[in-house]
Image 1 (tube, helix red, strand yellow):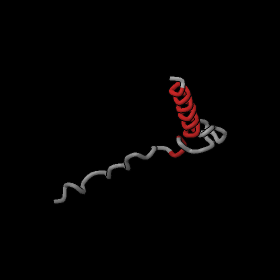
Image 2 (image 1 turned 30 degrees about the horizontal axis):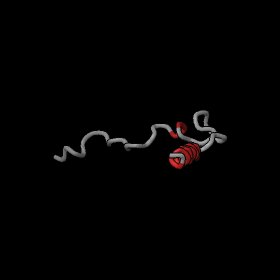
Image 3 (image 1 turned 180 degrees about the vertical axis):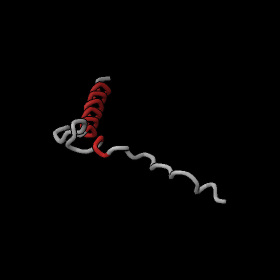
Image 4 (image 1 turned 90 degrees about the horizontal axis):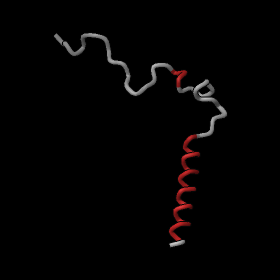
Length: 58
């Protein structure tokens, strides 16, 4: 007997249970929201410029 095949199949891993949680245009993920990656890059560039300006002063 093949005991491995017995029982319910395992659910997919790493996928949301409900599609609407990550869907664009929902309450948690609105269309007008800025892209977080763009904000992160802007902060990183500002920090790098600030660091470069302080390093030149030394």
